[in-house]
Length: 236
Image (tube, rainbow, N blue to C red; front, side, top):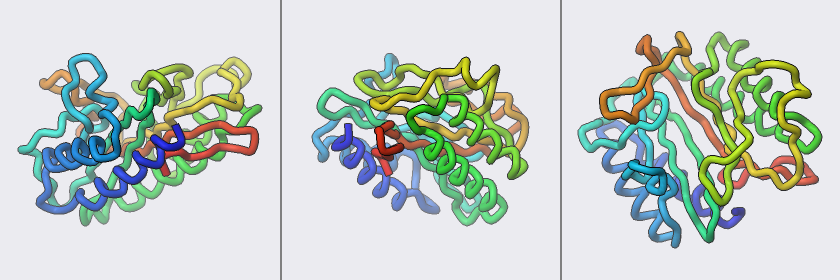
């Protein structure tokens, strides 16, 4: 998974450079397909039943699972989120990023999401609980004046794209009732945040999940391995 993570990190870096004014979601998808093939892997998302694309691309209120349609053109002020997964030598890795295109009003919001992910990764230590990861995300977002999304969660990742344990962006119940973090776990830690209500809805395409109130959302994700020496980001 370490090798696959390095390859996906390289792919993500190239995709970030391509997200710019006038570019399209279709161009992001085409580039991702080419780069994944070049790296000798397969698109993880194409292995999800009925999903036919290598990426998920969302804009503004779009949160996750957005179909990368060629007609989606990135404009000034947009917040663009890209999610991509790589299947390499029998294992999946998963990563996401969000960028503002001259979106000054979203600068603080996006920085808060990035900070929440950093703190969540630090909490992914053997001996801690999944609750600690969730608390790091929730506290950071709330302190910034934003909300964690409650309808969706991060997850374990490995031979399957989505494995246990679930990793919410919010706390629920008692810390000791959540799964214990142990060496050998590999976690897709996701920060899903919004500027408004955390209520979501599924679009007419049957996939795109957006914020119901139309407010801006963002997504940040890394695949993280838990080692005896601390968390190791595989896709950074």
